[in-house]
Image (cartoon, rainbow over the protein chains, first blue to last red):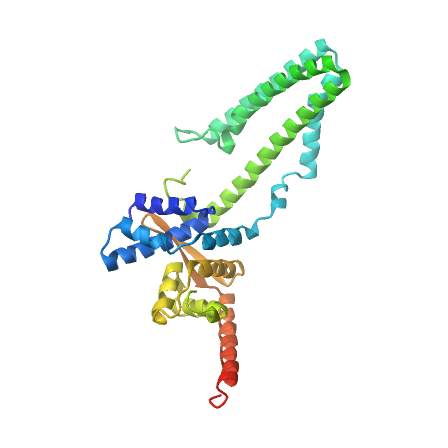
Length: 228
Length: 110
């Protein structure tokens, strides 16, 4: 029986040699582990010696072919399935909410609108934290701030700050060239919003894949490295 | 497969037959079983075996069970109901192919 470290070494070898799909790598790890064990038994050699001998049997062509075949099922369109008509309307409405005050209101009123947005943002954050707290009674140290659930906690303040910076930049450009500056500013806001939503859509897509894989192959996720 | 390209088309019926005889098997086991049964004449490489197993799994011919083996996981393959039918069909085709070859190569025996 191989130790955890030895198994990790085998997996790292496949990862370094470009076998990027997790389930495929697990299958290869089992295959190579078994081959190493058999060689160790037959030739009475160490793990390292057996490992060095066995990896010679694998060539990059085979591994690349495996990667290629495993990736055949990938459908890029699925990543865009998040953008349903209703969501596109919501995104455009959000864009309008950001942009219209800048077009329609004067500077004094704009400050009030910004304060309103800030209050709404704080409220959204508060609701999020309440929900997060209820869902994760004892988050502990293991929880990453980069996971999907905690993302809302820090992404909104960042978006708001970026918005503020861009707003001042926009004003600056506007003072140089009235129309051109305003257009480029609105375009930046639109891009920011679009890429923000696209980022979440992709996270959502990857999360779905992860959940489905976990549901289909629970055994694969029982090791400490992959456990949540 | 190292020994001969002639075996290439026979890989699917061989795997289906093995799985039918042994119930469930994992990848390495299949390669070793084939190697042992043919006295090293037929060596199935991982590059040939796993894509085929995955293809058969996606077609519903094989089903998969995943088990923890020490510090790693192992995927066991077994035939589904469709797989059993596919096995019979594949073996019949292989037999017909073999008979046809006999007619060509050794007409007297055929």
